Amino acid sequence: MSHKPKTPKQWLRSNVEPQSQALQRYAQFAVQLKQWQQLFAEAAQRPLIEHCQLINVRDNKLIVEADSATWATQLKLQQGRIITHFQQDATVAVQTIEIKVKPQLDRSALASSEKASRRERILRLAENSQEPLKSELLKMADRMW
Image 1 (cartoon, rainbow, N blue to C red):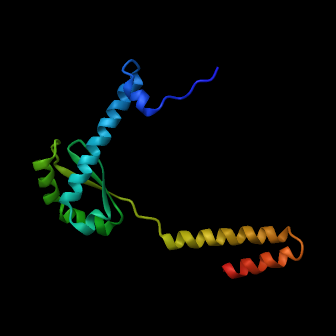
Image 2 (cartoon, one colour):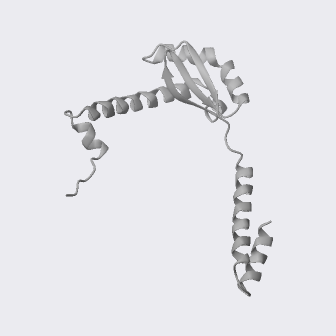
């Protein structure tokens, strides 16, 4: 007997099952969070919104994730204006901002480690290969370094 899994739309339409109520709450929260993120983008100045993201509103706090400590400091400097903007336009009473610093991965270091990993795989492959493939793989690995 084969059962097809229900789609999220089917879960949301079903009022009988308790899971549908949870999914409806999540859907409502997602809509509300998107509105709060738009309010945050309106309140914060341009370079700040590129490096800070509103991730939640809980216990009268805006929870914001910043790319670095520098951007967290810039956010702290604008905290009063952002809170005032939320108090005027949002459906939630905001009193503080909680900032979480989540640095972005260093793209160049990541690319370098991926390149080294590829080179190591090619070298291992060359060890187990015979000529002329072995010499071509070694040349390829040398060009990568």
